[in-house]
Each structure stands twice: as C-alpha cells, then as structure tokens.
Length: 436
Image 1: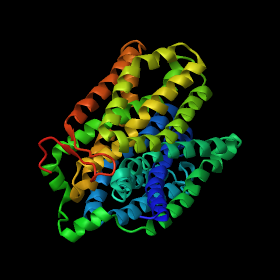
Image 2: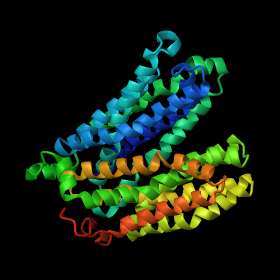
Image 3: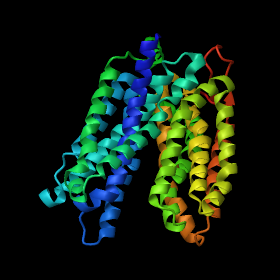
Image 4: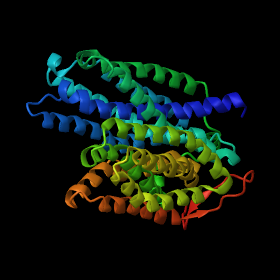
C-alpha cells in the first residue's frame, strides 16, 4: 500500500470517530445549556435538566443495538459499505438537530423529534467504532498494526477538542443570540465534516482481510450467533479490558469538573483548562504509544498502563486536595494525558487480534459497546454516589479506580500473547482455550 492510500485509509478511520465524539460532547453540553430550556420545558428547571440528561443517556442504551445491527452488516457485506451507512446516519441526525424548531414553536413534538434524532445518532455511533478500527487494522502491515489501530482512538480526544472549540466560539456571542441561533451553528457545520468523511471513505477499497473471507466462502449467516457460541470468552475479555480504559477516562475528564468546582472550589475555567491540556497531550501520545506497541507488544503496554492507573489513583486525589491550580493541571496531565494514553492506544488493536476475521466486526463491537455501557456511562454516577455515601471522602473513588484496573488486568491475564517480533508474521492474541 503506497503512502497516498495509507493516508486515505487512516483519515477514513479517524474522521468517523472524531465526528462521533464531536457529536457526543456537543449534545452532552447542549443538554445542560440549551435543550433543558428550549426542548424539555418544565416549570421545575431541575426536571427539565434531568429530562435533557436522560435524552443524552439514551444513546448509551441504543448503541449496543446499533452495534449488533451494523456489525452484522459489516461481517456480512463488508467494512466499507457499513461505515458509509453509519457515518451517514450520524451526520444526518446531528445536522437535523441544528434545524429543529423548539418547544415554543411546535410544542411537545419538539422533544419527540430531538429524542428520535438522538436514537438515530446512537444507532450510527454503535456501529461506527468497530468499523473504523477494522478499516485501520485490516489494512495495516503486520509490523505496523499497533500504530494503525491507534489512529481511530485519537478520534475520542480530537472530537472533544473540536467540540470544546466550537462551543467556546459560540458562547462568545451575547446570551440572546446564542440561545436563539448560536447553539445551532456547530450542529449544522458538522455536515461539512460528514461530507468530507463520506468522500474519503468512498475513495477506498474493501479491506484485504474481509476480501479473503469473501473469497474463502466462510462468511457466517448470523455473525452474532457464531460470536456468542464460539468466541464468548473473547467477548468477556474485551468487556473486561475496556473497563480500565473507559471508567478512569470519565473520572479524569467528566467527573473531575463537578468534583473540583463543587467540592474543592476550583474555578470552572481552571478545571476545563486542565482537562483540555491533558486531552491535547494524550492526542499526541496515542499514535506514539501505538507505534511503540509494535516493538514491545500490546499486552505489555496495556498492563503497564493499567498498573500505573491503579498506583496513581490515590496520588491523583491527594494532588487535587492541595487546592493548587498547578497541581490540578499536573494531576490531570499525568492521569488523562500520560497514563491513559498507552491503554487506549493499544485497546482497539488488541481487540481486533483476539477475534477471527469472520466475526471480528461483531466481536470487537460487542466487547467495546457493552464495556462502555457498563463502565463508561456509569462512572461519573458511581463516583458521585460514593462521594455522597462516604461523606465526600475521595478514598472510595480512588478504590473504584483501582478496582477497574484489577478487573481489566484479570481479563487480560486470560489472553495468551503469541506476538512475533517486528517484521514477523501477523501478531496474534488469542484467548486461552478458545475454540475460535
């Protein structure tokens, strides 16, 4: 594969995950700032806010269904065609949100339409990550699979940075202008990202590994049945491995905003700045860590990051407790910017290497989406509950971070590493006693 084709493949895998997280961040923030006032109108502002957040949470529940639907298509008709469908769904839903009339204009139809678009968005998101990952890893030369597989993971942080910048620019408007039309602009402009993504994806061919499966005539009729029958161990491993990657991410990136501002009296500006700086650093480190895993092995990188995560749990909160903005920034950079980077960089590639190509789309999607639903969406809620239950003590939250690392280390212990040296045949991670 020449350099031009390599750039196209990596851009095609990156653009979808970037848009996914841009949408995620945008909707989550708008739910608190705008949707509670313009769509979920209630006499009690708290009820309006809770309804807006409930609409945000809906995508976490719908994503596994989207994952099942589109991974079935991806393992049956191909990665490329599926990714065109998922990106189109995500793009249509996000763009349409920017055009919706408000509750004041059409009454109860407004929140119904918004929720419908959120569900469509969630379906597309559910199938996007697995396809974007496989587009990268199944095109990758064996000796660069770790680097290629880390590129879609950059979409998480790139999407968040784009969302933050878009919101920052729009909030410079007068309040009346922002509430009237300013909030719509990022949703509408996302159409340009989607058109670019579709153009890139239409310019690439189906992945070589899927073509090989097609040529062999071994495409399963029901990939999910084969996955759950023969690869259930790998699915459980992937779910467990996802825990330490997703829960601490939400602690360091989301929960800390409310904890630092409410409990420790940091300014919102300082806290968001700390998260943004750490996000930029981890974006830079992810491809570097991915490339490093091609030399030292995926499992070794993942274990190192997980152990470091467990060891840093208590020092992280101790640094926050000092009340120093400098230590707040340093703590966030270490946790989110440095320790999290190797874990997320190798996660996708590791998932792709434990599943057979015939059911790979279904396997990686199930592991990722179920793990995200169980440990990701619930992490800020669990942390808040622990604080409230234990008199605002951070100790239970630190122990919770350690628990996520232990769960993931136990999961990865069930994987036998058969990786060859760089330049040798394709590195392969297989579950112990797997029939796959």
